[in-house]
Each structure stands twice: as C-alpha cells, then as structure tokens.
Length: 232
Length: 119
Image (cartoon, rainbow over all chains, first blue to last red; front, side):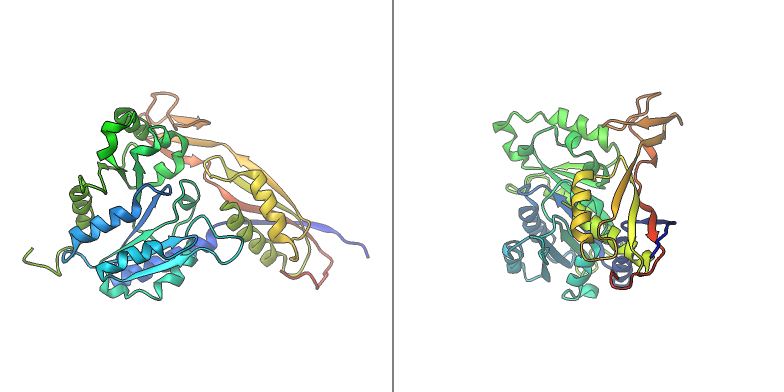
C-alpha cells in the first residue's frame, strides 16, 4: 500500500497541559484564599530547617500548610509534623526512578489531602535541584529560592534561569561566613546580573538570623495577615 | 532529567494530533533560555514514543536564539551569553522577546490509517 506523508502544523506549547493544571491549582488556591509559595533550592541548602524556624516564628500569626516534594522518603514531612500543621508529602516516584521536580499535576494530587480554606499560606517545598523545578509552574503566587553560602558565589551565573525565575532570594547559612572563602559582595553582584529586581535577605536557618525579615515578607504577602491573632 | 517529562508531553501532543496515523517526524522549537539538553530530550523521546504512534519518529529540534529589549534604553539585543545584558548600555533589566519557546511546531504524519498504533 502506498503511504503519503503530510505535514501538519501544530504550534502547541509542550508545557500547555502542565500550565493548564497549574492554572486550575491557582484557581483552587484563590477560592480558598491561600497564598502559595514555591520554595526551591539545591539539595541541602536548608529548606526544611528554614521552614522549621518560619513555622515557630509565625505560629498564631498565619495558618501555614506545607506540601513536601521529594523523590523518596517522608523524612522532611516527619520533621514538620511536630508543629501540628497540615503537611502532605508528595513523592515524585511513579516510575523511572523519580522525577527531579514537582509538576502541576503532582501538586494537584497532593492538594486533596490539605484543608486549603484553613490555610493562609501554603509552602510547596520543591525537590532539591537548581535546574528542573524552574521549568514547571505549579500554580504558585511567588517563587522563593534559597541559596546557601556553602554553595559558592558563582551559583547565580551557573544556574541563571533558576535565579532569574525567583521573586525572592534567601541567602542562607550566613552564620558560616567567617569560616568560608565565600565572597558575599561578589555573590550579590552575580545575583544582580541575573536577577536585579528580586529582593534578597541574608538569613541563617541555624541561628535564626534574618528569619524575622523573611517572616515579615511572608506576612506582607497576605492581605488578611494577622486576622487569626488580632491582638498580636 | 526533566527532559523525560518534556518528552512525555511531546509524545502526548503528537499522538493526539495524529489521531491514529503514524508520526514520522516531530518538529520542535526550543528557545535558548529553556534548560533542555537536546541529546537527553532525543533519548527520552525515543523511550517514551516506543509503543505509540510516534514510535520511530525523528525529533527535529530547532534552537531559537534569545533576544530582549532593554527596559532602560530600549535597544534590542541578541542574548547569546549569561548574564543577559543589553549590548547598547550594559543594563540587566530586559524584556525577553525570544528564546523562551518550547513548542511542537509541526508533525509529519502518514496519511494511511494503520489503526493498531494508537497512542
């Protein structure tokens, strides 16, 4: 049988399906009045430790929920359970050894286990990775990136797209600066070159330094911040 | 390796448009500012296309250069290196006008129905 080949114009965004689910997630968040942060960093930059400090400091001021994304284990979710807040763990391991990022559909599946109307601020802790998570919207309001000083001052130049996509940069582990060769002014210049507009805070998730600024930023994201504790 | 997720979406789009016809070629536009490794994407595409109507299709990846308009001086620059910078005034505040594409542009399909290879 003779077969003819015909060219068909498609012009369809590869991530359209992801973006449509991200939009649906966003509508669900908006209906519930939940502000959503997509928290991204390399592995070991201090996302979970910073979350612990954040939860301590914002206790009674904001009702916070956490969606934890990891390739494997519930270690991070287990660490947060002591705060008595809604935490859901999404393991990105449906096959192929586990995805390197959260996508909108994985987040969508995790949302069923969260009481969104009772959550003012949902923090989505993405898989530790400086490349892949930047490519996938999940329905967030803001992207926050943690870069720790143990990673080196060249990271904004090496991973420009992740740094570019962030709305806020937290420079973590600054308590270690006296012990490192890390050149903070150079890091900030590198950051200015790839993302001149995002605010940045110097923090230490270990000592709590700067966590107040970060928490103030979070409180300012919420129009009804503080409503659960009007006397605070 | 988010190329695997991207490849899965490409195959899904190709098979939906093919509607049972065999896909022989997929033409993809990938902007310079997308973090896509062509060899990883090609490998993932072959893996994911296996057993679908896109099995054996070739994946043509057209790289799209990046360009942006400076928000300070208004000049348009080709952005072929990081950090992204205006070539006229050196400013870093740019509106990206090209280079963020990730688009299935077109498909080549065999017009003869083959039925058994639906995706």
